[in-house]
Image 1 (tube, rainbow, N blue to C red):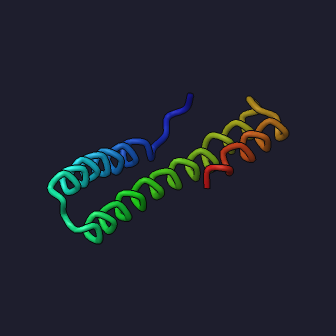
Image 2 (cartoon, one colour):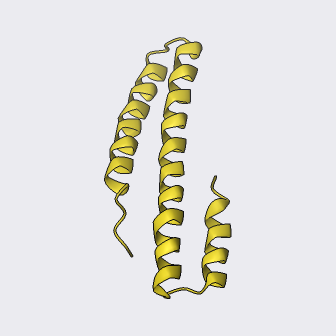
Amino acid sequence: MSTHATHPEIIKRLKRAEGHLRRIIGMLEEQRPCVEVAQQLQAVEAAVASAKKTLVHDHIDHCLDDAIRSGTRSADEALREFKTISKYF
């Protein structure tokens, strides 16, 4: 597996989202207003979606491109992998 330059940033984003999600659980336990909880859940959802998008783009830009250029995968194999990962957009 190749090194991904974006992984450290993705990890930071996900750890922040994880901490934020724990705080949301606390909000529910404290019976905070549903509007406040929904707003915070939306923020966590957006953070996770952004991390996923970054990961998928990095994979396409680096892994698939490098694999084709280096000859470790055929264009057909790379295309199948692209189709698979693009499902997660």
